[in-house]
Length: 241
Image (cartoon, rainbow, N blue to C red; front, side, top):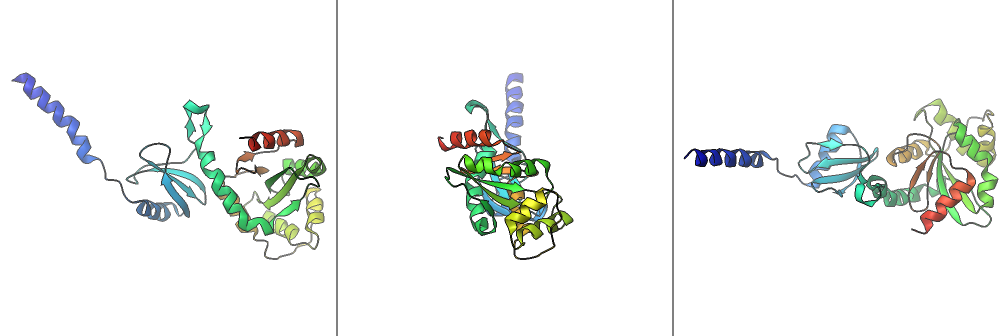
């Protein structure tokens, strides 16, 4: 009798939590909850590589939320069985390439004569390593690497930094203005439809929080400066994947 009572109690304890589990809600409801709670723009919401989670691409990077919308985390998800592959980075690679397309006419392009690769660089005219990269532009181009600049003023938008970058993009000769700005020279104020704020917001969507930040041809993000030969080798490796 005591054994039956014990088993009955155990069974009851096991079953109770199941009845308390919140029911999953529709992706559209999750989207609305995130928009209302976090004030973010949800670009897409899809099942995550982990069962029971949704992967949400927002204008502030990737988030993960459970099916009932009660738990959220922000960070990188790795696959331990595949050499620590960064699944979060992989999720953003394709969307990054699509989101770059509308900005192609806003890019300052330094085209290689014998083009082999194209890299998009989010840059800031006051950033030391951005200036170092710019000084080596001829070396990148000689290796067949075309460099496309987008603006990422580290002080955010609006800011004096953003105004200075707008002056570069809107100058009569933007390439000369970029040379001068990265040499520490003052640039005459100018305004146009350069959409510096939109460029900055795009970088934030990509998960960028510093400069330089490089987007490779497959959408991979590499934070930080890469010497010309290192970048070339990196591009070659990614092209063979």
